[in-house]
Length: 111
Image (cartoon, rainbow, N blue to C red; front, side, top):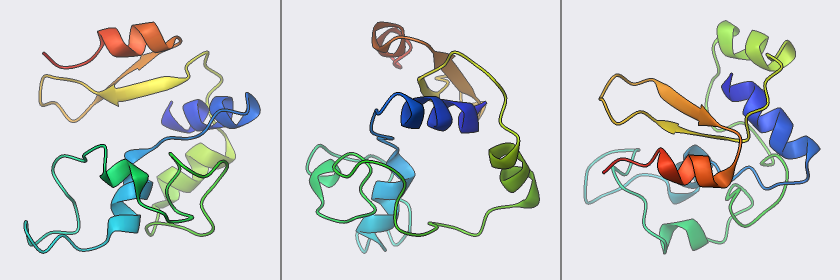
């Protein structure tokens, strides 16, 4: 389903605006001693990197991880969905909630 969101956004000429590409561009976070910053800030989303899909349209210039076979298959054979947005569910399940409109997406934000 996530692959379908990216395909839909690319087909519509929308930026991908995906946090993992920004995380990749930021690199290792010395403060948290981690490759994954727990909360991106608005300043983080402005990092000037071709991997920042908030600033640069299309796909990044290269991979940001070593994808699994399941991920590669999802991209090769994406589901057909109407979704343009997704975010992590607020229940700690590690799953996502999907939406068609930006307004729906905003409504899915955690309290």
